[in-house]
Image 1 (cartoon, helix red, strand yellow):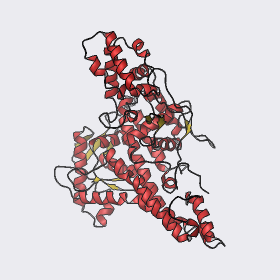
Image 2: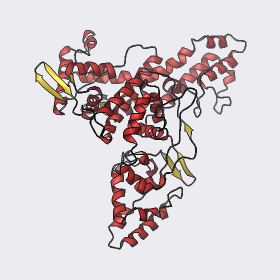
Image 3: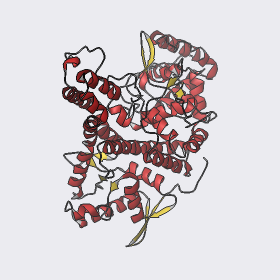
Image 4: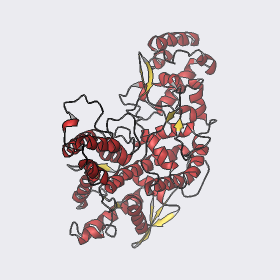
Length: 507
């Protein structure tokens, strides 16, 4: 019998990928949730003890986020030609009139913390400007500032008349899954210590500013368990860990490194999603993503890249179907079919494996009167329908978010990495310098990216594209990286990819 997963009607997706990956939790939000788990476990970071569940107690910081994102009056009051004391009085009256009363009304400390109302207003403006998706129409309790330190971290909340409760829309547990992945990587504890050392510096100026505005920290009342990850180990967990260790070793400020940690998390989570789908379907071929390097002229690689994208988009639905079909070939299912009570035993077998059908059904189906094959067919139908709501959208949402896919200059989506992602790949892959052809080989080995003719030789053999098109695509990448200052050409046949942040620093 599989581990039971609370909070789901039936578990098919969850036993393939975990509980849970979620399309609306884009990689930057997954990393923010991850950091909240890490901060709560900073005494033993990225350590999962045998027989114990990882737990954490996230911060809520309701005052901080309310002052930043539920405070439209601060600039208006600041501009009024009145005394400093009157500014404080007028602003407090306006702010408290709209306060929720769930931890955001005790603001008397602000007058003692800031020398003047103007200083307070400038601090609000500075921290507010650092927010992810600052101009989005998300509710104020679902907006997040840059993680300047431990005091700037908090979970997603729904705040209404009944109180404040954690919401699973934007912090949907993907960050918890990311935490478990890195716990289960071979070098997870080393990475954990490095992350705490670099990211959780309480004395950092902007973290001190967030703490001054927040006052005493506000945390969830009780610790909670992290999500469920079905695999105890996976090569992708180790790849992600090694990428993060490499990025943190570069000679750049940690706040700059965070952008590349997010990109690395995004591409590795995406590959975990695709690799797990292939594995569940019995497909042993590695994941491939044929990438068009966009240039001024239309490339023959574009159609092939679009085909590659569509093929990968279909992997997860195929995995869901395969998960149900595989169970129908097991001895447990065979025994249930051949028992004296096939309907009852088939129901029991499906419940043990998938937590379905429910003991008490409120739909139109009487499961006790169904034969096993019909029950399994209905489960597959329900699982695929549920899958398409969120899990089935992950490939499209995440690849677009990290800059891996695009519809620019095309009628359909294809893999076309942007400059930001290419720079992150160089920073993660290249210690100092790497011969350009070796870089292309490593990009395919590590991430399944097919760009040049050597990496796509099997596509040429199969007649899907000619060598010249992939060779031109390779040259386009070289030109792109050269324009970014990441390639040095020594001769027509010798180019090196260079990491501008190669020397190892501690800043």
